[in-house]
Image (cartoon, rainbow, N blue to C red; front, side, top):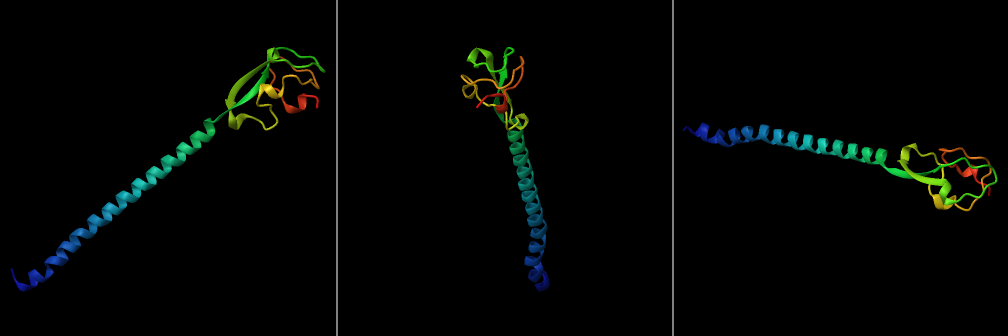
Amino acid sequence: MTDMQEALKPIKYFLFLIPIAMGAGYYAGNEIAVSEVAMHKAEKLEVNTAQGTVVRVLQNVPPNTVIDSAMLQEQKAFSNRIEPDLVNSGDLVVGKRTKFGLNKGQLVVVDDLAK
């Protein structure tokens, strides 16, 4: 080998390593992006599938009637489908009077109960 070739040997290695380093950086960045997208999808799925409780009436209840636990049923529902004014526990309803009549299958709303 000539002196010129010996002098260029480190540069050849360096030029060989640059594309490898760039490829590794691209691959690592892509993996990070894919994992972040998967994490956001999991968070969104968790929010959309979270469940809460609603209270459903099992029989027709006339106005001004004291509600007992036999008249009610607690059901699970997706949290993003539950309105804020719906009662979320049967314990909040039992022993209270109805302001209006309640129909069988109706979800109990806070305004349906007398204060």
